[in-house]
Amino acid sequence: MIKTRRRLGTATAILLVAAVIGTVPNSAQAAPADDVTTAVRHKLLEEAAVAADQEIRAAGVEDTRVTVTRRDGRAWAFGTAVLVAPRKEGLYPSGWIFIARQQRGDWQVALEGEATFAELAAAAPASVLARGERDAFTTLGTLSANGDYRTGMRLPFALGQSWTLRGGPHGWSGSPRPFSSIDLFGGDQRVLAVRAGTAYTMCKGWVRVVHDRGYTTDYYHLWNNIDVDGASVSAGTYLGDTGTDITCGGSASSRHVHLGFRQNGAYVAIATHNLGKWVPREGSTAYEGYALHGSKRVNVGGSLYNYGALGFTEGIVDSYGGTSVSRRSGPGTGYGVVGSIADGATAAVACSSSGTSVTGRWGTSTLWNKLTDGTWIPDSYLYTGSANPVNGSC
Image (cartoon, rainbow, N blue to C red; front, side, top):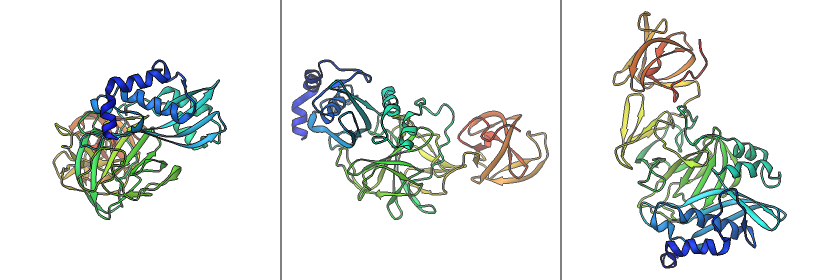
């Protein structure tokens, strides 16, 4: 397979697409083809032709994996489309869920992340898309968190276990940004869904789960992965075991799960988001970095304990190097101290208000949070995943 790919070369791959399709269409243009599988393969080769890596640009038809899982007569199709990567370090496969519609003999193919994908999802019949899938695929959003990094996600293993942070934030394909991924292994090696959603098997060793809020998580290198096509999963559902599977390309020198983080159809930086009450932070280069739980810092090679998901109206106390944060009777340093709350504690927020400006790890802010016990702490000392009130104003 790889030898054939190398002979094709970039120019040949582009010519192959152009020869069959005529011209390279944009995401909203239909692709003539005898069958939907051929049309989706052409779409994948379009993606390959503009890839950043030279070896991916050299991909040929034999490096595409198209699985049509649902059909509605001759008019509609749904499934997964994967562009296989060479089996070498620093390269990973690219994969999408696709929807296709045939009109006047031509197949219009749309991949996740394209505007046309949402349009086709809205129009697809129930035999092709279940209602829950349609809702998830038609919810439009931006390709970034826009200052709200709340995920409601846990770490991808059992609550109460500690796993090793094998690789800090890095790209889905290694060094290229965004640093969307982390590598983990340990415990019982059972990889679990980080949040409820809808699961799809992209290829052997690779499962994707589509969540709410536009988020999607990818799990690669799995052994014994589940075989699913739109199955509903809960947080903690078994997806597979850590492994070294590279059926769709890339490399794995030892067993682990390569966890990728996406939003609205594209990989996004995992840093500053929350997973199991840990906040990943980037290093100066790929695979470096660390994770924070309050002021506790765990570098690559250290253990992450799975505390469970952080609620959308909760925060993690970060004393910015201390052992605790003072709780006050009102929203400001001029109010009396009525106790303290330990670094790393989970605090439930009742509402928020403006008060004295305070500088902490997460910047300088005048926002203060009233906790459910009636006391107040500055937002700069509480990681909530958002710089704005998470439970309304007081």
